[in-house]
Length: 517
Image (cartoon, rainbow, N blue to C red):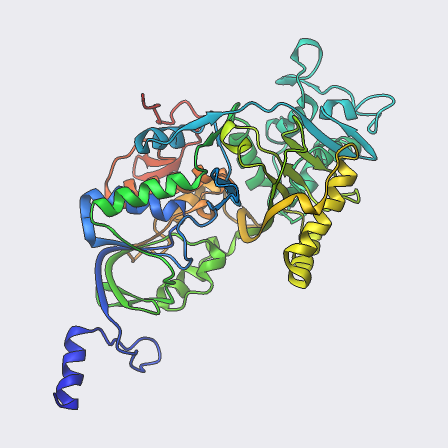
């Protein structure tokens, strides 16, 4: 065959499309889709799963990683008993959307009540954070909070009540609401004295809330909905990734296409169709669902991605970096403790430790020895890992744990496996001083470019549920209903006259009936 005929055939069989600079792309295979989904985390996979019965192989998904799930990632245990979480970990009792999905996919959720905590603040250990307060304790001037709508006096008291009441005060304050240029720390200090606020910070398991200039108005809206997250945690057998696996298998059974290790490099518009480029193919689609967080979208080129990045709503979103380190051990040295954390002003280099307490988890002899969102201590773990790998990290962990649990005999030789995970986009808040509410971001994400058939889904674009995986699922449901007409239950953005409104899950108007098994 002549060179000219070969070139002509290449032009017919393959899409060699000039993008941006006008220089011809390399001759890449052409994949045609009705809907192209960029990103295979919870939101992207759920979107694929729901569209697959309707569109079959006309819906396709592209994931940059060699695995699907994004921040839902479980690591195989060395003893062969299952997987342990490097990312999303649990489902809470009130998260109906996930319980319904578990029933739909045949996933077993094991309830496991918290048994024993160990907390360090101001040089002392306690199992109940209430016991840090009062005369003779590290916070002697902090007494039982007694607000009209939340009291810890007498029969109203419960373990952790003092911190719960102060957290509740952030969104139940009868006085002026947060100002536009207030971080949550500034606003909190308007509501309580510095000692009570220090108590609230020091008994919290997370640090970035109060140290990264999070918008106070956004945080208060989140806290109001977060307060309804209750009460018993549930853990899926197989880890949270069984949700991803179940949806992927079902989507593929319906003909949907999903590609891993295939990052989307650019998203452009040609005529009435979108052109997506990966290292392996050119993709054309009528609709695009972008299921990558803002940090990932910054690495995607092309006119569509660039236009989204210029939107003020996009710029308002603030990613929080998180490090998790999982260790597997040859024996369970931690006894009945299931949670531990330390004040950031201590010498301990972690915020939070999680020990296994569901039946499935206990069999794996694994701990999440570091779960850290404090910018100061994250740097220490990242530096140690880059300098000395897992050995350096294990040395730090054993040193920290031995000091935190002086009665336990903890040795590096007991560690059978270590997994280090740096999540650059662990979860998302809004930046201080932005012009948008959480609800407005969720509605904007449905159609960030008014004249395009493009939407954004994921936890980052549903800030009222920041840090939870159900944020991603609800974001997907919102897009599926508003942009594809599916009419699924459990949407948090619904039609309101001529417009749209956000409905928190603790609102009486929120529609998410529990499925029966």
